[in-house]
Image (cartoon, each protein chain N blue to C red):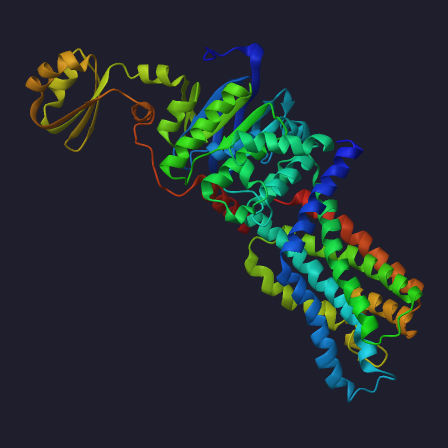
Length: 330
Length: 251
């Protein structure tokens, strides 16, 4: 299992990586060590600092302080070597809509110094990875959102990067396309031994794809481990209760690990809920509804941040851009 | 970055600019027809009252060769804003080539677009009865080439600073038309009032128009060597400034 951190195989390392925009700290002293061949997820709500982190790791954005090393190269001192080591799929479409898939890929191959005689065969190879060979000479304008994303994934792989960054690879795609993209990413990781770092605000995506996850909120890493271990830290099952409950009674019970209250709804972490639920309900007070489920990353997130994921607050790049604009207008 | 990978980087950007150019036919058509409208309609009308010795339409023809360059070069540069908008610029800036390489590639791409159009117009000049010779065509091409280098750089500098496509109109009003109207393309420079004379001499296009008139019609107000040296100086400054602007450019 590639779950454990191994300093010998470390391919990405950040030390107190920080980005400030005026008084706002978008990324706050982030320390990461990512192994070679690992699928690593940066999970957090919109505006948490995921994209900003990725922009710094890819040398597009200068950190305010701290450092980052990619494939042994410092992002500030050696940006060109860093760029040659990485592939990137941006959150927003970044291909030229007027050019065909082939032309976009050829442009990319030239920019990344792929040997001229290999360019055409490489293009065919990556297009077949994402099932787009048949659309090779079609103009990108005619592609659906999912196809365009697939083309851009293929493009990011064209120069065989050691490290592959995917910024919200399924944002804005319908659920079916999302499943497809996940399949592609998974099969890529199996076929090619490369390090994959992806950002997402979909719990399910992180849980399905990543070997390790860093939960990031307000620019800080609040938890970092494998999805299974993170879920285990919750300890037990999640019980949602609604009604007028006797909070003190609940807290007294030995099998209740954690209680969070919001109005008349309660969220409890309960050890072995199947066995203990009856006793819990007897003593709890007037219960109107009960819901029991095994914990998932959402509960982990709640556990560490005390609030649910803030979905739908506008995308994080909009956020970063608006900050940029505010800065520049000053 | 070694020389071969830089050359490939330049070629990559040139390839893209050129492909886009070939596909956006409306841009090509308008850049070619606008000067012809001016030539026939404006030139035909004003020609009846003109006191310029000789054929007025012939007199203004060199200005229209420059007009195609001005329009294509400046709008080509402004398209950098579009690249920013569709995030294509990120894909380019995250690739290994240096910003200078990217600038040179974009400059050569823009020059190709601008020159192809003005060269086509130059040959249309043969059909219009402009007294062109092999020698004057070759010299004209050279003058247009050095003019394009500077103006394309100017466009790219503007594009690198622009934040949204809304600025397109401003470029038209405050850069493109002044460059054209002050160049002496439509009138002789000798009898101008002082303030206008100063402005025309700041406009780099003036020297290209004067040089082209010299080689095509044999009339000019400055020596050809002075025209060429001034345009080259202007190129030098703008290419340096463009490289600097691209290195400074934020996403």
